[in-house]
Image (cartoon, rainbow, N blue to C red; front, side):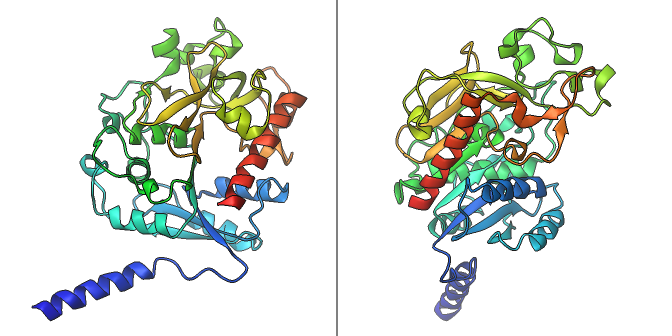
Amino acid sequence: MRHITLLLLLCSLSIQAQLFEPLPTNINKRVIIAHPTASNIEVLDALYQKKLLDLSSIQLIGLYHRDEKYDYSKSQSMLDTLRHLNMSLLELKDTLHMDSLFCSNASSATFKQLFNESEGIVFLGGPDIPPALYGEETHPRTKVTDPYRHYYEASFLYHLLGGYQNTEYTPLLEENPEYLVFGICLGMQTMNIASGGTLIQDIPLEVFNNDETLGLQQLANEEIHRNYYPKMPAHENDTLAGSHFHTILFKDYFFPALAQVDSDSKPLVNSYHHQAIEKLGKGLVVGATSSDGKIIEAVFHAHYPNVFGVQFHPERSQFYIQTRQSKFTPDGEAIQLSDCLDDESMSFHLQFWKAVNHLIQEL
């Protein structure tokens, strides 16, 4: 019996060791990209082509769960044409259940190995998180379309950062506090709920007592966080951009120091969300808000120096490579996305990515 047990243990270790091949001699680190859709790969390529991210010596691992709704064959097809990106896809196969995400579970060993064999992870935008993950009923405006993506991303982030769900748990980052965890939009929201925070499920209704399907003309520009026209039945087939632009206010040292900009600056950012952080998760600090102070636009971690997230979208490829135009209003003209940013705001975006790149190179 002891021989059988030992054999099973050795087999398990062997399987774990085969998660990644050894890094080639020209590659010095590994960074994980959660939800590696074709559009997200396009973003990475745009940032690389514009020399905002130096990925030449970095192996990118596109991580996804086998039960996600997205067809990742599209991603592989794109990667087959982008040989200059050192990127491959990795499918997680461990079974996850909604009631066992914030504790030891079937993916815990895999999460630990992914952490041990990489220097950082980026979580990107996407659809609404199941409210049950943060202890709430589903709001009428919440649309959950891909639950398993949320299950694995929330559980992975909990394993990395810990949370109020179990204050006795030791986060993986305690073993490597310099590890990079960067979230954009949904990525920041998932970071928050994974560490025990909650969300505003619909900004127009819960914050402004309004309904974007009826139009929000009575709201100030700074109070609109995604373009309301596509949500109105009369314009839902008009092929309009879903995003909006508004300014942000920095609330602490982190982001001005990161991007090396004046703390009093108010850059325009691209916003595309109807949900937002409500109660902060464990260890998270507000780094920026909307100009009215009602919506959290960025957070950072009080203990881990390379953990941060933004609610807005600095990664829009059309800021950096202008290949198509966008139309925001039914009667408006199509314009380049980059034309929506003034010089100060574009400078902030460029400085932001240069700072992220510096962090990655120094990991």
